[in-house]
Length: 209
Image 1 (cartoon, rainbow, N blue to C red):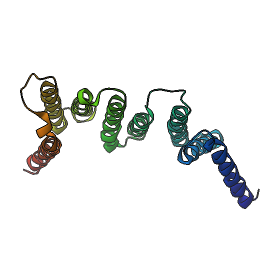
Image 2 (image 1 turned 180 degrees about the vertical axis):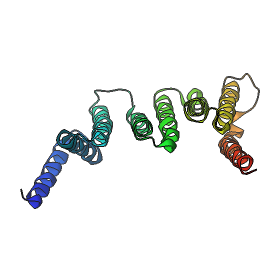
Image 3 (image 1 turned 60 degrees about the horizontal axis):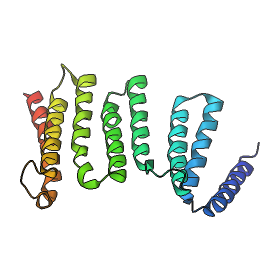
Image 4 (image 1 turned 180 degrees about the horizontal axis):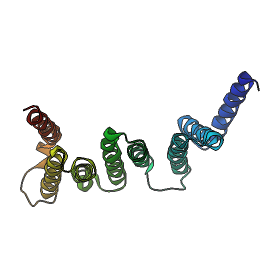
């Protein structure tokens, strides 16, 4: 088996598929991602390694949804959100099956970002954007109860802080609190980041004592 011929054949197939799908306004990057996903699924069929299967599913699903959007089969833009959700699923898989403790964080937080992306892309952004704080807060609650309960409290505190930010922002959006939210846009995110960062730093200082 000549690897050079296999590589050349693969390149030609990719170029041909790209040129064909370009007639339907399909982005070459989507074509590449689709073929990459198919390749990893092929590797899985040979060696049965689950990471190959997961990467293949993520790549083919994201690229497939993007392609269907381009040819107007889907009217809902979920491709970006699905990518974050599937990537988070990969981290959760590694957390549960490979005992990689730190992967619980991206495994919970990335799907929250994915759901938020879908909401913002398909709903009125004015009413959807505060949901990011509720989603991230909920993710930190899950992280706490799954991994850190009876160990550390910072995920719980971060969850409460972010959830509170979300409720406050929704109260301002719906006029329950009479504050011009447009004047606070440049302050909300810095406050959220500094708040969560401060909680983590305080927790680490307590552990050192």
